[in-house]
Every structure is written in structure tokens, then in C-alpha cells.
Image 1: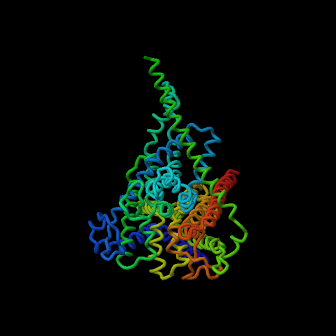
Image 2: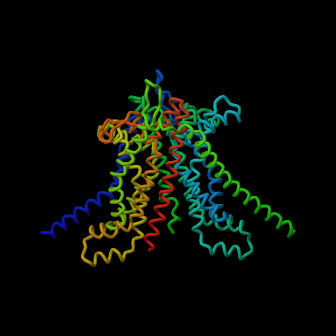
Image 3: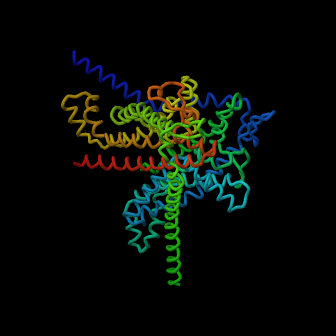
Length: 289
Length: 288
């Protein structure tokens, strides 16, 4: 009697664990399905080329236009800018933490980076809004500081934690023998670090860059607070709107085709993210040697 | 000739070093500036009245008690749902799964979930929970959205610590005649408690800092919600982060926004410390 009850419990738990295991997979499928179902109709109605390559987004005009090229190119340029500024700073700091810093200094800097990672994005947005936006306006002498440039600055700070922590792990994983060999041949410590250790950690550093791209392209709230939010084609000192902010800023009052088009924008963003994930999972294979 | 080469090498060395130190300095300056500025602008605006009242239109006062409570409700509801699923998934991946392809697929799915931006979670959460399950804009819809979002964190941390449980423990338990579930319940899970706690703390950090995913799922209301009403449909409420966004962007109440920012900053700090301390403490226990 007792034995059979135990068996039932075992079976039950077995099923429970299987269900939990498959949950993550199911969630991904559900998310994809919902985005496809709600995103595709608008693209169909507007026309794929018109939607992706249209340069005007005027959903509430008498003759509504739904072109999201401004959002796509803003997202691409914004991410690119954040990578150009953030990656060198991040990678160099990671090298410093891993190789050059005194132990205490390194741990302190590492905790600092972890703290940066934990700060909510709206807080970055708030500080960007109050400090960076007026600063940019003063320095470049332009009427409004809420523009692509401010967004790039905020984004490059926000990608630092992922760039630093992943690069640092990669750099620390390089075998000590490599360094010893280089040092024994008469190279200085700095030369060894930059010519031997960093190239050896290349794939890890690339992973950190791709992670940074993912983070930058998906950021919504902070960017919404500093980028001005007008649907123009991107200009460094012009008010711009990203893919993420296009969804966030109009969702609350949209309806009909306009609303469906917002889901299509989300679908486009999702495809970008999937591509980045594919690169992470399959493109950078070296890391699993 | 030799001297020239030496000189060049030294110069290069110096420049590279300089760049390195400069970057590290920039980060420190960013961080100190950011924290200093937020605390400077925020701490002075935190008052007992602010954190213990709700906003009142009549008296024209602003209080963030509803937002604090909402954050708490969402944290609790999310963890209640995500913990069993996440721990179960980690146990499945580590103890039960035999099909290598399925494991790989689940791992890829987990990584994909971790990479999806929160605004997409917000949108999908709205489609699934708010509309499809007709929960309405509500705390529970927000919490369920965050369940999907925090699932990868829990799975990953628990799985890491499950991997560190020695196989001899499992063999010992099985040899004494226990079934698989009994072995997991009595031997495996207790030894991986550190991963579960760390996963919880990390998830709390993500939930507290989340805003884009909650904007369209949990809503923007600032009313006080009783604890019994919190898990009900249509009980909308904004968390601290969403409130910060509303006060800063829509209403221009920057003093309140900075006060909330300071509170969030302190919370982040506490959560980070807690994660570190538990990891250290539990590791020590293990070594004994």
C-alpha cells in the first residue's frame, strides 16, 4: 500500500520536473507565436517594403503613413555609437581589473561595476534627463539636448557592466603559461597583456560586445527619457525615436492599424534580438573549447 | 637604432597603460558622480510623510507608499510562481534529462529568454495575461510577466549549484533505497540551497529595477491596494520604477523622482550586498 503511494509520488514529481523543464522552451514558443500573430497582419496590410523602408511615420495623419526606417536606423546608429564609446572603455577597464590592478583596487572596481549593472534603467534615464541633456545643450549650443547623442552617452554607460564582466572573465581564463612564455622572451608586462592575453581572449571579448549590442538595442526607458522621441531620420543632434521607444511611447493611446503596426515594430525588434542570440549561441563557438 | 626601438617600445607601453588607467578612472568617476548626484538630490527629499502616505489630489501632496507596497506585492507574487518552475527546470536539466538534444534546446531557450528586452516582455505580457487571460491591467499580470523574465536567472543559478553537489551524495542516498524524488528532496536540494537563495536575490534585483515590462501590464495607478486584493484581476498599480518614470517624464516632479531614485539606489546596494554575503556565507558552510 505504502509502496504504491510512493511510486505514485515519484511518477507525479517526475512529470512535474519534465513540465518545468519544458516551460522555458514553451515560453519562447508562446512569445514568438503571439508576436507573429499580432505583428504580421499590419505588415501585410501596409506592405513589407513600405513598412521597413518607409521614411515617414505618421500614424495619426489624415493619410496615415507607417514607415519604420527612422526607428530601425536610429536603433542601429544608437547601438553602434554606444559600442564605439562603451567597448574600448569597457574592455580596457576589464584588462585593468584582470591584469594591472592591485588586488584591492580590482575587487573594489568589480563591485562598482556590479552596482552599475543593478541600477534600474529609469534611474539612468532620470540622471540623463537632468544632467546629460542640459550639458549636451550647453556644450554644443543647440536648442534641445534631448537627442541621439545624449542617448548614445547613456547607452554606452549602460552597456559597460556586461562588457566589463564578460571580458574580464575571458581575460582571466587565459592560461598563465601563455604569459610566462611571452615574458620569458623578453616582452614587457604591458606588451604581453595586449599582444598575447587579449588576442587569446578574443572570443570572450567578442561575446561581451555582442551582449552589449543586445543590451543597447533592447533598452527602452532610459532612452525614452533622453532621446527627444520625435520620429525623424537619425541625426546626431536631432530628436530621434528608437524601435523600443516607438513601441513604448504610443502603445497607451493607439488603436486599429496603428496599434497593430506597433506590434509589427516589436516583431522587428524581436527578430534583431533573435539574430544577436543566434550569434551568441552558434556564431562564437570557440568559447566552448 | 637599438635605442630608437627601445624608445618606441617604451612609448607604446606607456600609451597603452595610460589608456587602461584612463578607462578605469572614467568608470570610477561615472559611478561616484552618478551615486553622489542621486543621493545629493534625493536623500533630502525623502521624508517620513513621503514614504507613509498615498498621493492626494485634494491636499496636493505626493506619497509613495502605494508604490512601495506594489513593488513588494509583485516581488512576492513573482517569486512564488517562478521559484517552483525555475528550481524544477534546473532539477530536470541536471537530474532527470537524458535526451541531450532536448537539454540543448531548453538551454538555448533559456538564453533566448535572458536576451529578450523588457519592452517586448511588457508587450507580450499585455497580449497574453492582460488580454488573452483577461486579467486586466493588474499587479498579477505584471507579476506573471516578470515570471517569464526572471525564469532564466533562477534556472541558471540553481543549475550551477546543482552541478557542484557531488555525485557521491546522490549515490549514497540511492544506495539506501530512496527513490529519485526522495533523493532530490532530502539530499540534492538542501545542498544547493545557496544557488536557490542567490537566484532569488538576483531575481528580486531584476524585479525591483524593472519598468518597461510593467508599464503596460501592471499599469500606472497610485492607489493603495490591500494585501488580499493584490492578487486579484484588474488591480492596477505602479511599482517604484514606474512611479519614478511617471513623476519625472509626465509630471515634472523631479524632487520626488530623485527621492525614489535614491531609494532604488539604496535597495540595489542592499540587494547586491545580500547576494554577496549569502554566497560567501553558504560557501563557508559547505567547506566545514
